[in-house]
Image (spheres, rainbow, N blue to C red):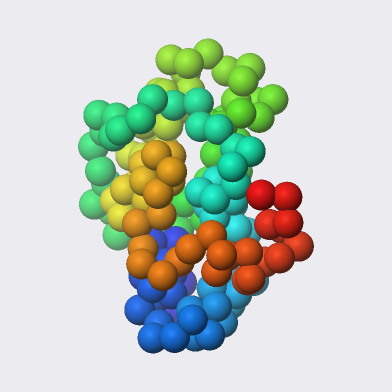
Length: 142
């Protein structure tokens, strides 16, 4: 089954033990680079979002086929943080592009993006420590 990023996080969250959460998280990290990008944007203290806090005005999509849009569009997230690409973009264009992204992804993934932008991962049991255990090589410089 091809789950959205939100559905994958919900699946990890519902696992009973830390060992089960870790195994499920590692499984999804192997399946999709987007999951690793989302976790990096959430927990890496070197990353600064270049967007205002809170939820921007947007119209969530109800399209059933929008489940995997975030997986395919995760590379665009570099424009919203303190990268060369993000810093080169004008603030109005960056905010407009973020709203367009929110309106194209699954409505649950849109809420996820707003949460991580504001420094929170809205799922119980998926902590920075768990992520560091799941992908130690990628998280050693956090």
